[in-house]
Image 1 (cartoon, rainbow, N blue to C red):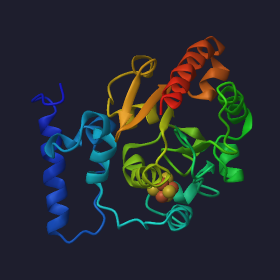
Image 2: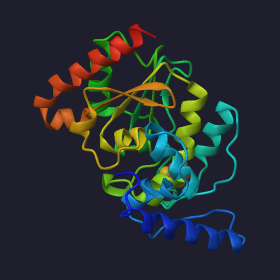
Image 3: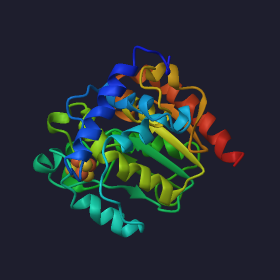
Length: 253
Ligand code: SF4
Protein backbone atom coordinates (compact mmCIF):
# COMPACT_ATOMS: atom_id res chain seq x y z
CA UNK A 1 0.00 0.00 0.00
CA UNK A 2 2.86 2.36 0.74
CA UNK A 3 3.65 2.79 -2.94
CA UNK A 4 0.06 2.92 -4.13
CA UNK A 5 -1.05 5.57 -6.61
CA UNK A 6 -3.78 6.64 -4.15
CA UNK A 7 -1.20 8.27 -1.88
CA UNK A 8 0.88 9.88 -4.57
CA UNK A 9 -1.27 13.01 -5.09
CA UNK A 10 -0.92 14.03 -1.43
CA UNK A 11 2.83 13.50 -1.58
CA UNK A 12 3.13 15.42 -4.82
CA UNK A 13 1.08 18.30 -3.41
CA UNK A 14 3.32 18.27 -0.33
CA UNK A 15 6.47 18.34 -2.44
CA UNK A 16 5.09 21.18 -4.60
CA UNK A 17 4.07 23.21 -1.55
CA UNK A 18 7.48 22.74 0.04
CA UNK A 19 9.23 23.72 -3.17
CA UNK A 20 7.14 26.90 -3.42
CA UNK A 21 7.99 27.87 0.15
CA UNK A 22 11.69 27.20 -0.43
CA UNK A 23 11.63 29.35 -3.58
CA UNK A 24 9.96 32.12 -1.57
CA UNK A 25 12.83 31.99 0.92
CA UNK A 26 10.88 30.48 3.82
CA UNK A 27 13.04 29.43 6.77
CA UNK A 28 10.38 27.30 8.44
CA UNK A 29 8.20 25.21 6.18
CA UNK A 30 4.72 24.14 7.20
CA UNK A 31 2.08 22.03 5.52
CA UNK A 32 -0.82 23.20 7.61
CA UNK A 33 -3.46 22.18 5.11
CA UNK A 34 -2.55 18.52 5.12
CA UNK A 35 -4.58 16.00 7.01
CA UNK A 36 -2.92 13.83 9.62
CA UNK A 37 -2.83 10.94 7.18
CA UNK A 38 -1.20 13.10 4.52
CA UNK A 39 1.47 14.25 6.94
CA UNK A 40 2.22 10.67 7.89
CA UNK A 41 2.43 9.58 4.25
CA UNK A 42 4.36 12.58 2.97
CA UNK A 43 7.51 10.57 2.57
CA UNK A 44 5.97 8.86 -0.46
CA UNK A 45 7.65 11.65 -2.39
CA UNK A 46 11.04 11.15 -0.82
CA UNK A 47 11.28 7.39 -0.44
CA UNK A 48 13.89 7.39 2.27
CA UNK A 49 14.27 5.27 5.40
CA UNK A 50 12.75 1.98 6.36
CA UNK A 51 9.14 1.23 7.16
CA UNK A 52 9.97 1.30 10.85
CA UNK A 53 11.19 4.89 10.80
CA UNK A 54 9.06 6.19 7.98
CA UNK A 55 6.58 8.40 9.79
CA UNK A 56 8.88 10.22 12.20
CA UNK A 57 11.48 10.73 9.48
CA UNK A 58 8.91 11.93 6.98
CA UNK A 59 7.53 14.48 9.41
CA UNK A 60 10.97 15.95 9.84
CA UNK A 61 11.13 16.41 6.08
CA UNK A 62 7.77 18.17 6.10
CA UNK A 63 9.10 20.95 8.28
CA UNK A 64 12.64 22.18 7.85
CA UNK A 65 13.26 23.41 11.35
CA UNK A 66 16.32 25.25 12.57
CA UNK A 67 19.02 22.79 13.59
CA UNK A 68 18.48 21.60 17.14
CA UNK A 69 21.30 21.76 19.69
CA UNK A 70 23.46 18.67 19.96
CA UNK A 71 23.71 18.54 23.75
CA UNK A 72 20.94 17.18 25.94
CA UNK A 73 20.68 20.20 28.23
CA UNK A 74 20.58 22.63 25.32
CA UNK A 75 17.92 20.52 23.62
CA UNK A 76 15.85 20.57 26.81
CA UNK A 77 16.23 24.34 27.11
CA UNK A 78 15.20 24.78 23.47
CA UNK A 79 12.03 22.75 24.07
CA UNK A 80 11.15 24.61 27.26
CA UNK A 81 11.27 27.94 25.45
CA UNK A 82 9.87 26.66 22.14
CA UNK A 83 7.16 28.59 20.32
CA UNK A 84 7.09 26.61 17.09
CA UNK A 85 3.40 25.82 17.29
CA UNK A 86 0.15 27.25 18.69
CA UNK A 87 0.39 25.12 21.84
CA UNK A 88 3.04 27.48 23.21
CA UNK A 89 0.27 30.07 23.65
CA UNK A 90 -2.00 27.92 25.82
CA UNK A 91 0.50 25.87 27.83
CA UNK A 92 1.59 26.69 31.38
CA UNK A 93 4.98 25.19 30.62
CA UNK A 94 6.53 22.72 28.20
CA UNK A 95 7.03 19.20 29.58
CA UNK A 96 10.25 17.70 28.31
CA UNK A 97 10.91 14.45 30.18
CA UNK A 98 11.35 12.63 33.44
CA UNK A 99 13.61 9.79 34.50
CA UNK A 100 17.16 8.69 33.87
CA UNK A 101 18.92 10.20 30.86
CA UNK A 102 21.03 7.02 30.57
CA UNK A 103 17.94 4.80 30.81
CA UNK A 104 17.68 1.34 29.27
CA UNK A 105 14.03 2.00 28.40
CA UNK A 106 12.28 5.06 26.95
CA UNK A 107 8.50 5.30 27.32
CA UNK A 108 6.84 7.60 24.78
CA UNK A 109 3.31 8.87 25.40
CA UNK A 110 1.05 11.30 23.59
CA UNK A 111 1.06 14.75 25.20
CA UNK A 112 1.00 16.40 28.62
CA UNK A 113 -2.32 16.60 30.45
CA UNK A 114 -3.45 19.10 33.05
CA UNK A 115 -1.27 17.70 35.88
CA UNK A 116 1.78 17.56 33.64
CA UNK A 117 1.17 21.08 32.36
CA UNK A 118 1.01 22.29 35.96
CA UNK A 119 4.04 20.40 37.30
CA UNK A 120 6.28 20.24 34.21
CA UNK A 121 6.69 16.47 34.72
CA UNK A 122 5.28 13.83 32.33
CA UNK A 123 3.05 11.03 33.58
CA UNK A 124 2.11 12.35 36.99
CA UNK A 125 -1.31 11.88 38.54
CA UNK A 126 -3.25 8.63 38.59
CA UNK A 127 -2.17 7.42 35.14
CA UNK A 128 1.48 8.13 35.89
CA UNK A 129 1.36 6.33 39.22
CA UNK A 130 -0.30 3.35 37.55
CA UNK A 131 2.40 3.32 34.87
CA UNK A 132 5.12 3.38 37.55
CA UNK A 133 3.43 0.49 39.34
CA UNK A 134 3.18 -1.59 36.17
CA UNK A 135 6.78 -0.85 35.18
CA UNK A 136 7.89 -1.91 38.66
CA UNK A 137 6.40 -5.38 38.02
CA UNK A 138 9.13 -5.90 35.42
CA UNK A 139 11.82 -4.31 37.56
CA UNK A 140 11.88 -0.96 35.77
CA UNK A 141 11.81 2.45 37.44
CA UNK A 142 12.10 6.01 36.23
CA UNK A 143 14.53 6.54 39.14
CA UNK A 144 17.28 4.62 37.40
CA UNK A 145 16.23 2.70 34.30
CA UNK A 146 13.31 4.47 32.58
CA UNK A 147 13.12 7.77 30.70
CA UNK A 148 9.64 9.12 29.94
CA UNK A 149 8.58 11.69 27.38
CA UNK A 150 5.74 12.49 24.97
CA UNK A 151 5.25 13.05 21.25
CA UNK A 152 4.16 16.62 22.06
CA UNK A 153 5.90 18.66 24.73
CA UNK A 154 2.98 21.03 25.34
CA UNK A 155 -0.58 20.32 26.44
CA UNK A 156 -3.29 20.53 23.79
CA UNK A 157 -6.22 22.58 25.13
CA UNK A 158 -8.85 20.44 26.86
CA UNK A 159 -6.66 17.38 26.21
CA UNK A 160 -7.77 17.21 22.58
CA UNK A 161 -5.85 15.00 20.15
CA UNK A 162 -2.58 16.35 18.73
CA UNK A 163 -2.97 18.01 15.34
CA UNK A 164 -0.78 17.10 12.35
CA UNK A 165 1.08 20.39 12.21
CA UNK A 166 1.75 20.20 15.96
CA UNK A 167 3.26 16.73 15.57
CA UNK A 168 5.23 18.03 12.61
CA UNK A 169 6.58 20.98 14.59
CA UNK A 170 7.46 18.95 17.69
CA UNK A 171 8.72 15.67 16.25
CA UNK A 172 12.32 16.76 15.86
CA UNK A 173 12.57 17.14 19.64
CA UNK A 174 11.46 13.55 20.12
CA UNK A 175 13.76 12.25 17.45
CA UNK A 176 16.75 14.02 18.99
CA UNK A 177 15.78 12.88 22.49
CA UNK A 178 15.74 9.26 21.36
CA UNK A 179 19.07 9.72 19.61
CA UNK A 180 20.71 11.21 22.71
CA UNK A 181 19.24 8.80 25.27
CA UNK A 182 19.84 5.87 22.91
CA UNK A 183 17.95 3.27 24.97
CA UNK A 184 18.00 -0.49 24.58
CA UNK A 185 14.22 -0.57 24.09
CA UNK A 186 11.23 1.68 23.47
CA UNK A 187 7.69 1.41 24.81
CA UNK A 188 5.08 3.45 22.92
CA UNK A 189 1.92 3.95 24.97
CA UNK A 190 -1.21 4.98 23.10
CA UNK A 191 -1.98 5.11 19.41
CA UNK A 192 -0.29 8.42 18.53
CA UNK A 193 3.12 7.33 19.81
CA UNK A 194 2.71 3.81 18.44
CA UNK A 195 1.70 4.94 14.95
CA UNK A 196 4.38 7.62 14.82
CA UNK A 197 7.25 5.38 15.91
CA UNK A 198 6.23 2.37 13.84
CA UNK A 199 5.31 4.45 10.78
CA UNK A 200 2.08 2.44 10.54
CA UNK A 201 -0.37 5.29 10.64
CA UNK A 202 -3.38 3.26 9.52
CA UNK A 203 -2.96 0.38 11.90
CA UNK A 204 -4.93 0.43 15.11
CA UNK A 205 -3.14 0.12 18.42
CA UNK A 206 -4.68 -3.34 18.78
CA UNK A 207 -2.91 -4.31 15.57
CA UNK A 208 0.43 -2.90 16.67
CA UNK A 209 0.69 -4.35 20.16
CA UNK A 210 1.86 -7.84 21.10
CA UNK A 211 4.87 -7.83 18.78
CA UNK A 212 8.33 -6.30 18.65
CA UNK A 213 8.82 -3.54 16.07
CA UNK A 214 11.96 -1.54 15.42
CA UNK A 215 12.66 2.17 15.46
CA UNK A 216 16.11 2.94 14.05
CA UNK A 217 17.30 -0.49 15.14
CA UNK A 218 15.92 -0.02 18.66
CA UNK A 219 13.35 -2.70 19.62
CA UNK A 220 9.93 -1.12 20.07
CA UNK A 221 6.87 -2.49 21.87
CA UNK A 222 3.49 -0.74 21.57
CA UNK A 223 0.72 -0.92 24.13
CA UNK A 224 -2.16 0.95 25.72
CA UNK A 225 -1.80 4.31 27.41
CA UNK A 226 -2.08 3.97 31.21
CA UNK A 227 -4.93 6.51 31.21
CA UNK A 228 -6.84 4.16 28.88
CA UNK A 229 -6.21 1.30 31.29
CA UNK A 230 -7.83 3.28 34.08
CA UNK A 231 -10.89 3.77 31.87
CA UNK A 232 -10.87 0.19 30.58
CA UNK A 233 -9.39 -2.09 33.26
CA UNK A 234 -9.97 -5.16 31.06
CA UNK A 235 -7.02 -3.98 28.89
CA UNK A 236 -4.64 -4.31 31.83
CA UNK A 237 -3.93 -7.96 31.06
CA UNK A 238 -2.90 -7.05 27.51
CA UNK A 239 -0.68 -4.28 28.85
CA UNK A 240 0.92 -6.72 31.27
CA UNK A 241 1.56 -9.20 28.43
CA UNK A 242 3.21 -6.41 26.41
CA UNK A 243 5.39 -5.64 29.42
CA UNK A 244 6.52 -9.29 29.53
CA UNK A 245 7.47 -8.97 25.87
CA UNK A 246 9.39 -5.82 26.69
CA UNK A 247 11.13 -7.52 29.63
CA UNK A 248 12.22 -10.34 27.31
CA UNK A 249 13.62 -7.76 24.86
CA UNK A 250 15.58 -6.05 27.64
CA UNK A 251 16.83 -9.38 29.02
CA UNK A 252 18.25 -10.26 25.62
CA UNK A 253 19.87 -6.86 25.05
S1 SF4 B 1 4.28 21.35 21.30
FE1 SF4 B 1 6.42 21.14 20.69
S2 SF4 B 1 6.61 22.39 18.84
FE2 SF4 B 1 4.73 23.05 19.89
S3 SF4 B 1 5.39 24.78 21.18
FE3 SF4 B 1 5.49 22.90 22.43
S4 SF4 B 1 7.62 22.20 22.26
FE4 SF4 B 1 7.24 23.65 20.58
